Image (cartoon, rainbow, N blue to C red; front, side, top):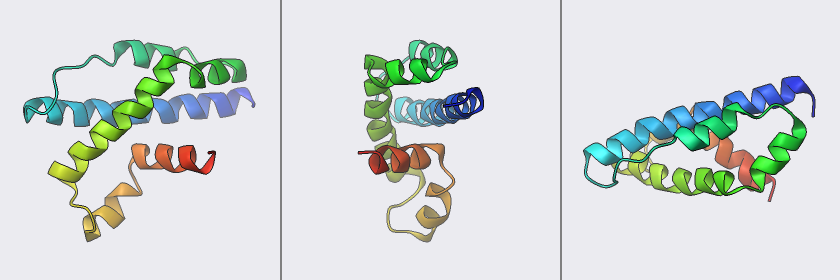
Amino acid sequence: MSKEQVAYLREEYLKVIGRLEYLLKIGVNRGIYEPYSLTGLKNQIKALRTEQDIVNFKKSEYYQELCNLLVLCGSVCCRFLIPPDSLLQIYFCHQCPIFGFEERLYQNE
């Protein structure tokens, strides 16, 4: 994996974190979730510089935390923002960094 590919992946992860922050805020405001800090996870992602860093990250508890948060935030999005099985879902979900991350995640399994 080249440095450019690692940088691209790091930026994609940071876009996912940005969306998670937004959805967590909605969940906290709606009383579904307690406030949750993504600082540690975000710092781990910002530190990704090499292919080995990516490999180590994917084996870490931070990667598992990221995957778990995707499920929680997906429920917030479906419940309060984009109704499932709607035209909005077809349009907006494909633009969402979380959706793209999950697509790649399941393709690699």
